[in-house]
Length: 441
Image: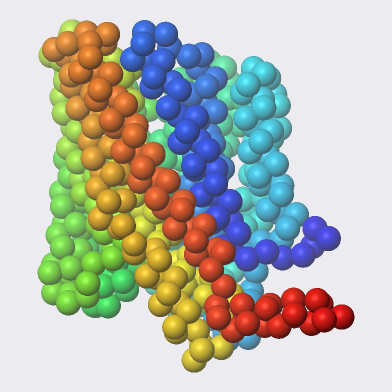
């Protein structure tokens, strides 16, 4: 049974499920901070690992399979992974969460090894498809390989911590674990997907690709310098990295902006979320520079506590990553569901258009809710510089932000459920006929 293959779409849907559950769980630590009763650190560990390991990583791996076409038409049903790999990956995530809850870090480490084994299996199949389908240059090959290498590198650092190796280097390993996973894998992978997907959605060739290529090279360089600065605790190096990232991000975003301005396509949920995610990436880079500059003085010019760190990191986690994930899902899931249920390309069009129309419903409310909710967290953190945590304005800002964020996620979940349950008319008619035959018999 476990040799049976599954669709990459299953990885994406499962990852979105993890993302929704982890988002609800993430409300608890924030509420605890506001009420001056912080929850134990393991609750935050559950939230972060459920989001990144169970959710975002699984979505990215499944999405890459759906975005990379098979080399030949005979491979259209080429699997993303086996059922055994799928259950191994998700069972490992559950094992990690149980280990964090019980404070059994050996359990976390062993479960992490299981997850890594599943990742290696999926990455091997994914890279095999890339090499067969795309005629990549040396530079392009390195760009697509680098996030996958960072994913594995960050996981290795996590294993060394969980299993108790080199405890004297725990702080450095933790920094490497976080930044290789988040910056090296998630951010680079999403930038690559957005870079290729937005012009496709806009149905317009990329304007000034050399500008975009220069921007991406600077982003890669900036991330490398930034990770080096974190590992060496050098604020000046971090600021240099921030300047490089800022220039690279503006060049890359400028190329996308010019492509959008030259396009005549009507905005949709996918394009809107992806474009907003680019905006939040730039905001995060600017805020990161300000955070670094604030640390140059001792004591810092502005107080910087845990709530401010939560607000800053969630500009990336929600503003950039979640918006990008929702945008990617809004584009690939209707296409994948239509292709899976209607193999004939000539007959697929009307059904595919119906699914896309469902995904585009309430897109303005969905994008605005996620974006305003994310910015509300920044406002919440800024308010603590002038008013106490117990004030009414803090409570209003917190619950308004959380309400907006959950509104955006719930809208997306409702539309996703509608798409999955919406069958094409031909399949519905066939099912009705079969039911009638059973009743007659």
